[in-house]
Length: 325
Ligand code: PEP
Ligand code: MG
Image 1 (cartoon, rainbow, N blue to C red):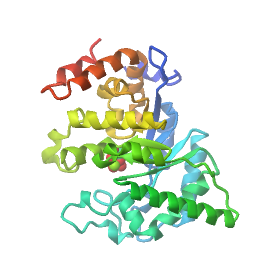
Image 2 (tube, rainbow, N blue to C red):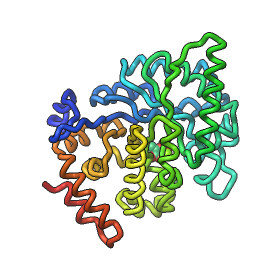
Image 3 (tube, rainbow, N blue to C red):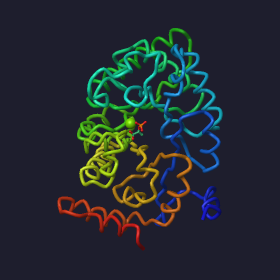
């Protein structure tokens, strides 16, 4: 099976009915580039930048950020990279940022990700400036984690505008059109996806957190692991809403949570309208195998039927049938 999958690397990722589907990689370290390339990733849909802060007492400065992004951009050889701004807090804490150690009784609902960055501009600014400067070196997109309201989006847009003016004054290069997008990983964000999409250039669905927050399942708690259900009707509804909102606002939408890399859900997601998937690079060929055999016309029809019956008790069989020829 592995050998057969390897033969798919060079093949275009297109469904049987001719719909192009982009299969991108989630990366956490520059050393992951080789795996992304070996599996034919057409881009990086999520570059997690937390590693820059790990196992050290001081903070990375702008130059260090820039050097690490430049290494990625050069290594990727021209395919686009989506750099996610710092997502510290909860499972990702560091010594150098005391505020990343949760104080409240519900750290997942506390000061993490974009919330932390907006509270600590000294933490955020060097990273934003470095991402802007990196955008002069190759195709870069900037992505914000855990957005839950439009004020956060407006604040970041204003900050980026200010930093662009600063860089220009300093004679430093950047892409003035750098696309800025948001992760949709909080139910509130999915419910206002249209408003968010209107202000930004793209959306990306983070199912790991979206499931955690929608179903009230701590993603780090093994005792409720069995309740972590990507096909829960509420999750399907929020995913579908987000895809429709992005489409209506004419914005690209991808998915970068684990669900996107699970071949059991490839047809379901195609049927819900998803056309951009980002996943662990080792999963790309498994997902591609399903993409190549899929007929989006048929899947759209069947998923429309599933959505129309979403309030009925058990969708399990209908969802399973998507995978049986
Ligand atoms: C997600 O929440 O789905 C996601 C991709 O982000 P992370 O797993 O880094 O929280
Ligand atoms: Mg997340």
